[in-house]
Amino acid sequence: ALLLGLAVACSIWRSSSAWSAAKLGRRATLAIPLLPILQQPSLAEVSDIQWNEPKRKKTSLESLADDFTRAFQQTQWGVNGRVQPRFFDDKFVFRDPDVTTNGLQAYSKGTGAVLSNCKADAIDVTVNGPNQFAIRWRIAGTANVPFPGLKIKPYIVTSTFTVNSDGLVDSETDSFSIPTWDLLLSAIAPWWPGLAEPTPPLTSPYA
Image (cartoon, rainbow, N blue to C red; front, side, top):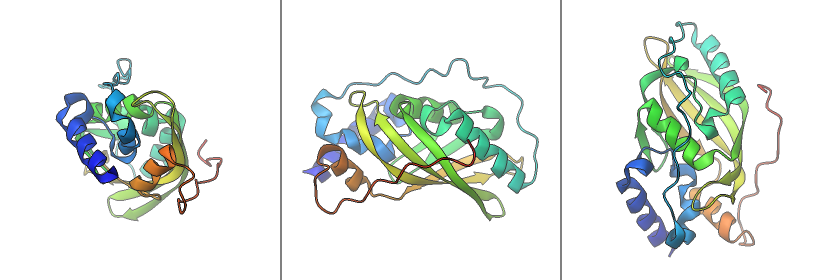
């Protein structure tokens, strides 16, 4: 039944222009049991983001990774969508195990539509290639769909970012410390045996 619900949910969300633009994959399946009351979410309010602000000048990858992580923590854009465009290529691509999103504005709007009641805490950042770095961060809070307040079990996201020749971040690929099926069961049946423990609270060194 869960797999069938997942298939139906993915079909619905991928066919919707608003949802296909959203960064939904890692938490979207939390809404599956409540599909009968699913409603279209409002897009994140991003009208005051300075989309045409000057881009950040190219620096060493280590400097970029540190500045980027501090901005990520300060603005909380990983959950509220309030990106700082100066760090990004406008054609930024987001990927997780379920969804690919094209364009920085689409990423921004979709993220805020789903996760604006969550908190992101950056744990560390590692340069792990000639043009990429990875941030590990804890997510906790509630989802906005299918109704505000759907609790998300805290877990760790590893976001790997690639950097283009201009020194701008052009992609993000996410992986998760807890499988999606576990997050789903934790939301609807937290008493289910064998579920992973939530990630304990932490204080980000980038706060």
